[in-house]
Structure formats: C-alpha cells, structure tokens
Length: 192
View 1 (cartoon, rainbow, N blue to C red):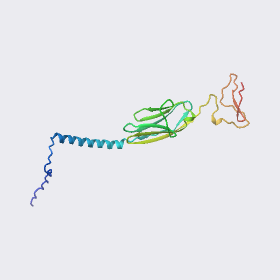
View 2 (view 1 turned 90 degrees about the vertical axis):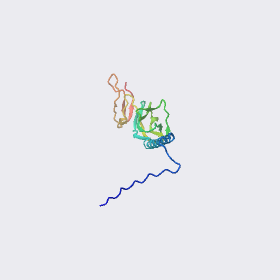
View 3 (view 1 turned 120 degrees about the vertical axis):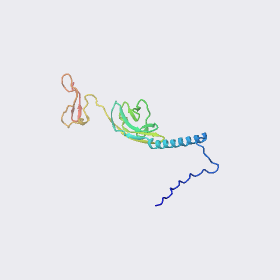
View 4 (view 1 turned 90 degrees about the horizontal axis):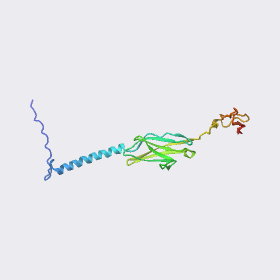
C-alpha cells in the first residue's frame, strides 16, 4: 500500500494589491468596534421589536358599580418601553381627574377608578395601550346597581299579588305596627 501525500490546505487569498490591514492600527480597531456596536444595536432593536409591543396579560373584567360608591377596572399589561395609556368610555376619552382616576400599581398593572358611581357611569370602558412598537386594547362593561333606601322592598318583591295586603321588610314603629305595607299592588300610606 502506498501512502498518499496529505492534501495541502489552500493558501489564504492574498489581499488586493495596495490593500493591507494591520490589526494594531488604531483606525482599524475603531472600525471594528463600530461594526460590533452596530451588530449589537441591530440585535437589541430586533429583540425590542419582538418583545416590546404592548400586550394584555390579564384582560379587564366587567364590574358592578353600586350608586354612590367607586368601581375599579384593572388590567395587567406588558410593554417595553413604557407605554402611553388612554382610557375611554363608549368611545369618548376619559381624562384623569376627580371623577376618573388613572392608577399605576405594580410595574405591569394599570387601573381606572370611577368615583361616586351613578347611572350615567353605565357603559363600555376601554383601555388603549401604545408604545413605539405597537398598540393593543381591551374593554369591559360597568353595570350600575341602584342603592336601596333603608326599609325599601327589593325589586323582586315590588309588586305583590292584587287584592291581598302584604307587608315588606319595613321598619316597625314603637307600637310594633308596620310603618308601611302593600295593598292592591300599591304601597299603602303609613299607619302611624
């Protein structure tokens, strides 16, 4: 068996005539640093484009507001850089102020507090989250529940059967007589 001579590695291509690079040349070193920084910047921008657009992590949930009290709509979001938050009700932008309060809790939790609830607060509330890489939105409803006056009859028992007197959970006088009652589908006058 004869041994074949090992294959020679091809020689590195020589630089074009008149073009030589010295790695110790300060100008070459500065250029190499700029190239590396440009690549890192590109990689960072690419990562921001992928991870930066706003997203809703926990959506808004419908809330029941009792007249005279406050309601809070809470949403968990993700966005980098920090987003611009805009709340709206039935398509109309809400301003941060005494009635509507923008709240920023944990780094990724935003909320809207609706104060002094009233029937006019019934509606569709939306959050719009925007940053340089995109936008997202979510919405929920606020339902308004009226308050009952002390001694008022719940809505489910508001109309008793016709012709039969019926007394609701009304307050009683010192004599033990009910202060109000129902007769023929109408509230009866006070007996005291």
